[in-house]
Length: 520
Image (cartoon, rainbow, N blue to C red; front, side):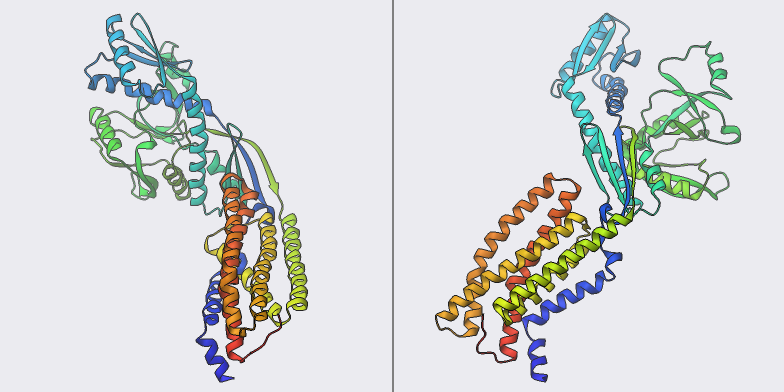
């Protein structure tokens, strides 16, 4: 017995058993390590609509805001006014000659992108986005919002969600086994658009401000509400468009600060470009109030006492939790375009529990049938092949936990399919061993030659199937991707099990028990 144990410790079989045992140690209990899809554990299914027209408007605003600096740097006439009307940028110059000169320069400079059409009418230059660029912006808005959603929900530790585009402007979000779906929905629904704007007038109501403007609101101004208390409560007249936004932030975090030093605040730092713009804005407007606008609401409007360069803080948040949430939103970035909730469905876990039960049952039935077939047809060799199947399934579970893949109902189907494919590899090997034994070679040599000769056929069959799995994962959606991941892991596991573990198991049995003959 000691000799058998010694042979085991120094055999290749010991390595493969230790390998899977170590993997199981790290993934047990399975429920805490494996991620389950929404079809197994229930959750929330949300359909969002992306306001792609707003993305087009944002593109126009960004271009319009950059026009004066671009023209000034090239020593061209600078517009006296700039507005956005019906998705067209309208630049007004002091004379028709200035307008024509600026239009000629902009046409030449922006000709490579071929994004805008230019028209000149006296002292006015109109810029209109071309249709192909509009479609491109809308597609980029959907893709950009998907990336922002991933960043936000990952920060919430919402494990392995499925986010995918549906149609031209819809996004599907699946939140499996989410402990607080309302918090996730709150994060999803906020645009997190941060802007810094100078305050021009303050009033208790919008009508108070309009009264001072003789009832006419300039086209480049807007009135925004404040969520502040006391002196900061009310409505503010600010510029409609801002040069400094959250896109210039380098980092954001929750902390303590404010007037007392112990208030919950959001601390932020600008990148180099943002720091330069912020310093220029604050240095030229000392004594004025600067509104910090988040999603169209002024959270605070402190007075500028000195020039500020690279960092600052946002006060006016109600709690440390709100400061933490705001910081997460700012770090994840603002939506390229706002989203609205079109549909929400709650999926209960009862169907998932039944699916898991049926999936496990199907695996057990498949294993039982394969055990009967293997033991009847291949005798002892069949028992070894069955042990390899159990090892194969354990290796798949270790692999899924390691790569943090999500187990879905189609994924369970992929595991059942893997069981059938794994026994096919064993059959190819055994038939080759049979042929070698028929030629009168020893059992040891027949086993080594059988595994070596069958390797090429097994690799060919599994590599082609693996390529199909890659295609399914690349172009499929959630359920199909779940099936593809399990199938690809199963193929890798089958190759390891069939070509290495099973061979080590055979050699150990032959060497440890001095087996000279085996009926296959």
